[in-house]
Image (cartoon, rainbow, N blue to C red):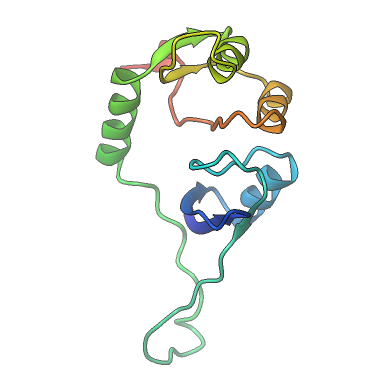
Length: 139
């Protein structure tokens, strides 16, 4: 995993975790990225600087990205599961109802296709993929 510092058009800064730089570009190209503050879909990577002493050529090779600490990932998943309502395949419709104030405002999670996700983002509805495995894979 690699963490990028991101910024939206409204200058909100936030972090994003990606499998690789290509994964970031792919998600950006498919319109799957959105600012968690304003929901804006114009998201860019900020430049990062490496600070420290000069390194030899063999030290400049980047180490393989490390997976996030599994304990922290489990804690994050638990927090999401405990603080959201699972609306399943009704996620796109329920997200729209909440956005339009036709349904009670609450945190929801569920299932959406890539096309449904893009449509929600284009409508200004902030959504993001979550690292939660399908229920049948829970231990």
